[in-house]
Length: 278
Image (cartoon, rainbow, N blue to C red; front, top):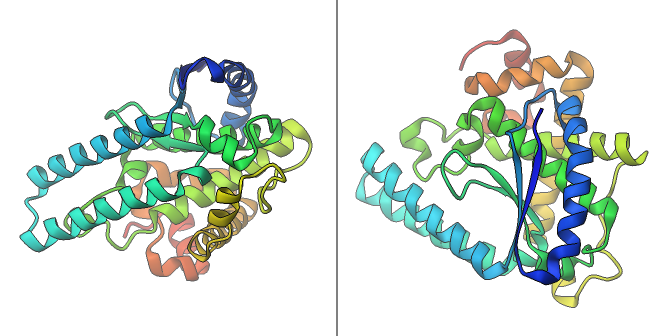
């Protein structure tokens, strides 16, 4: 049985948050496993971090991945330039939108996925003392840990590839699958623990002005709408074909939906339920 470890790297002011995370994480862990049918790493590691350190860790780990992929795949000059642009764009995105990213599953070190929470982002969101939100956040992120563990990292890490054309994954909708599954799972998890799903469709009354502006940006709303659509697709597959049918994906990456199949659930479901390879 997995256990939960919480590491506080955000300072003494986050001690009470750490206590809440440890309690909620321990309660949620068996429910996450039961809902998803997936194993979790042992231990499940949860960290609180400052925004500055979180940004540095993101930048450094992305640089390491870029170097490793470049050495392994020998991309062309044009592909390398495109990857650098992608890296800069991701860094800019994180620097801008971090107040809306209170919780995230990260792989700062190879083979060691963990959940990170940013107390500063929780404060901006008005969620620092919002217990139902913390249940939703941990349920969601621990589902990502389950995805990683079940696929031995293969499906989960492919979404961050700098050279997807070289690795043969350019046509795969990883984020659609991973986020849709996690949104479905956190809805089921919070219903089992709290009696009803936890919604974050509206900002907290305690949210900062900065958070509200970012929350309402069309780019963010478009992404969230895509995640909702993915969640509905995952729910339909599980309702009709069962959890085992979906969970074949984690050990057979060929079953990850193609990008065109995000608008054609029938085609993806046919491949998924029949177990056809790409």
